[in-house]
Length: 200
Image (cartoon, rainbow, N blue to C red; front, side, top):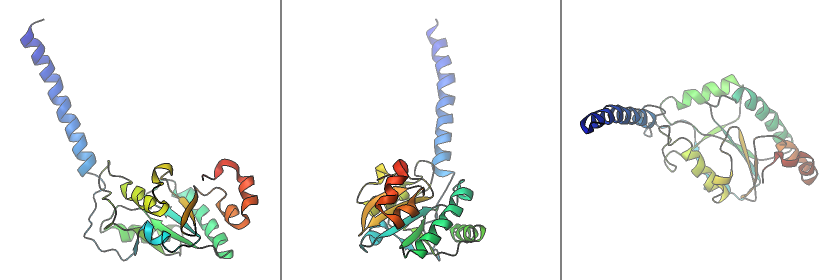
């Protein structure tokens, strides 16, 4: 095969491919989910170490206004919250959000949509990594959970709605909600009955 022809074919194929991959990378990194960290939200920010430092028994509930499963998980959350209140179980609801001028309105709409009266907190955008772009998604969530659980974030699924239980400020278990109310109210007896639905 003619060497010049082969070089021409390879150049004609590789160059557009490289350009296409570059365009896709730039779009994923800089074209979606861009944050404005200068925006000052009306919602209070918290970090994981703050919560753990209280040395309390507490359920940390992590939500996201953009989760497509909210129509299923938020009504379940409201049922759990009612049980928590009835049994004097401490909890805090923390939102993992793209930080921008629209975050407050997104949280307000979220509360209206699900008739949620509880106070919501944001993960501290000044302490934790930027969530902008496709490749940085959930970086803030991971670091928040690492702080909350003394570095166990890699072993905890980072989904929504997520329940992380601390006992005396130390990580105890996490679950997507199944069995959490029974576990907290009934203790070991419920734990035996909920099987592997709870992740320790």
